[in-house]
Length: 114
Length: 112
Image (cartoon, rainbow over all chains, first blue to last red; front, top):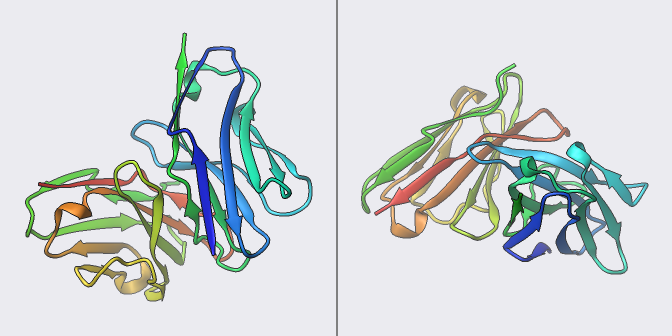
């Protein structure tokens, strides 16, 4: 069984501050982990993914995430928030063999204050 | 190249009515997925087509939902009759074999 928990449905940061969005997963098989972003009136866009190899993965727009197996976590970070980062972020897990059958978290809305 | 397109973007219907959502995948993508997000909750998998065949429909909530993909191109998701709990955002995604999926912008369905 696979599931994802995102802590905090709403996160607010000031422009220029660190962004940290939390994601913990549960998976009975080695997980593939993803972060998606949804900007207003747009579809889900892939930010970054972890499959195998290096546990620190870099994505678009300066975001990165680290896979920590011991903590079953895949937190998303960005050193300095920009106003354009305001969006909803979804963490997702999938099994190795069900290529696009994702199990998503409930999402975190990021608000960036000027 | 056009992305995944979903119609309509919004739909408001009364309980008991029928609604049909449409998804046009990226051309050449054999795989098509439907997902749903009920208000404030997680996005949940509904079903997966490979061409015109249903590969996995384990997430379909009940028999009021009917998905089709005739000819292996666009797909429709019909809800008949709609209930209040069917309100949410319905996402469609498409992909080539064993590659990442591209998502549409979603259809927001409100049942009143």
